[in-house]
Structures are given as structure tokens and as C-alpha cells.
Length: 93
Image 1 (cartoon, rainbow, N blue to C red):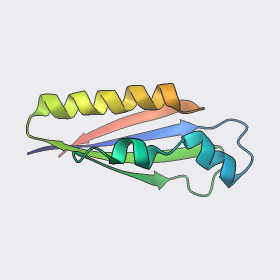
Image 2 (image 1 turned 90 degrees about the horizontal axis):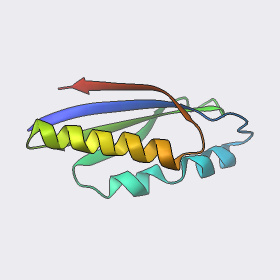
Image 3 (image 1 turned 120 degrees about the vertical axis):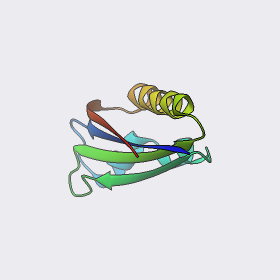
């Protein structure tokens, strides 16, 4: 079993409320949590309206599959969230 922890920090410029922050993040739990190989949670920046940090734990039988899933998550997040990705880190376990 191969496991990678993918953490992404996003900037949400101009975000004025918690409700707007939730709308801009657009249901990441529903989108990525459907895949049994991925666990997702908002892991940081809870108290800041203009930032958000999300962590994805990706597990698969091959390192290529884990890499593919991580890349897919990064691409979808960059396309679908009304904000900018500031930082991406991967920790291979």
C-alpha cells in the first residue's frame, strides 16, 4: 500500500464571510470524498476568511496510481475553486 498526504493552501482574495468562503470552496468533501482511495478535510486556516488549507490522504496499491490521483486533485482544485493555490506539499509515507 502506498500513501501520500497532499496539503494545499489557497488564497481567497476579497472573501468577506464564512458563508462566502464555504461557497467558494465549492463542496470539496463531496467532490473528492466519493473516491474510496481519498480522504479529505479542511486542515487549517479555519479562522481566516481569505485563506483555506485542505489535506488529502491518498492511498493506492501502486505509487503511479497515487501520483495520478494527487495530480488529478491538484488540477481539479485549481480549475474549480475561486481562489489561488499558494502552496502544495506532498508527504510520502
